[in-house]
Length: 534
Image 1 (cartoon, rainbow, N blue to C red):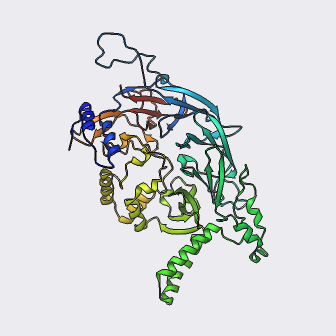
Image 2: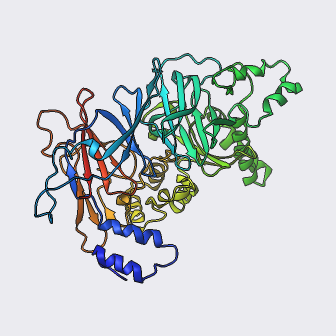
């Protein structure tokens, strides 16, 4: 096998050799072993913004104003500068003018999203690559002790107004908005919203409704269905016209305007004796599965008593935590207690997973978070749980233990170190459903090319505890040497007594360009470093 690390030799070999079928993209990515960020501009002069991420096509850098009211969009450009002198064989120090943020990024536009008492959710952003649309969210302050009225789930906070904005990122035009009133959607790190191709799911935790919308090419958000109180479009009509509704409070109260802009599907009334349509389908599936497992009538009755009727109220009390698309027809739902749905430490709460077919309105699978069969599916077909858009090529090459031998070794090591297999399974399934667009497609996170300390940095979009030591990216192939380093914060470290705080890293999806942002306190501006290929 050809093993030269010389970039010129690699280019020559690419001209005379044909890679094995299906490996062309992987062979091209090996060039990133040679093309790495090798220069850093520390504490670059830049606007005091909140940096969100690069879009997956690399065209835009999304940032927000520090007061969380304005969206500011930049376009990356490559640094160019003139050099005066005779010896230009070595890279010289950049001039002060070249070390500014504007030398690497062009400001495209700034647009105000938040109005009145709303603020932009700085951890929320979804990108539709096919049309270059962006989905942003603004909201008012959260009310923790809001009364559970109109069918709301007790114990779930309320937000007076949540607005989703659909923007065309090319020029910043707001194409459409969708408003939720007195509701609660978990917007942190896209937890409560999932985008798959042109379909958008929004989970109302407060009223237990999964709203499915379609993003049209014209830039409109179109209501497709609302899954919760009703599963089919005519469920309400059937119940209101059926004799079963005699003596039951008016079902039309289910549609008291919780959502503006013509979208009014709302929660079941607390006075209603009916369970929601989704909950009835879940209970029916659990009952039928237990019924079919036993053929003897006496054993069947005993098993139902032990496994269904005894836990009946526990199943009734389950609420939807998160939802993701598996494909255009199936949803993966994560369910659990109310405390787990609103807690930041949901990992310690018991959880269940259900697969819902939107066309047949049936539950087709149900698992506990310690189920071996679900873990085996997760281990072998992890990529399918990411449900990447068909239009995004680079998102299909994110390393996982189902497509990368080094990730498999890491998983095997974690399994061997685990105190018990059941606890290991629970720990691995905690990440399901995956947050939408939560991983960077940068080739520098490809475990086939580089290894790095995943406690300090990873492809997952999360803040990390800052460290004084640079993070090393080491080659996977001989000579197994450190290829480049990334360090957040000032070059000499923090010397004014401030705590190191947290750091975030924004990798361009295909260019050797990285932003490292270190945040200490809210009063101090962030320290931004730019790592690039000189």
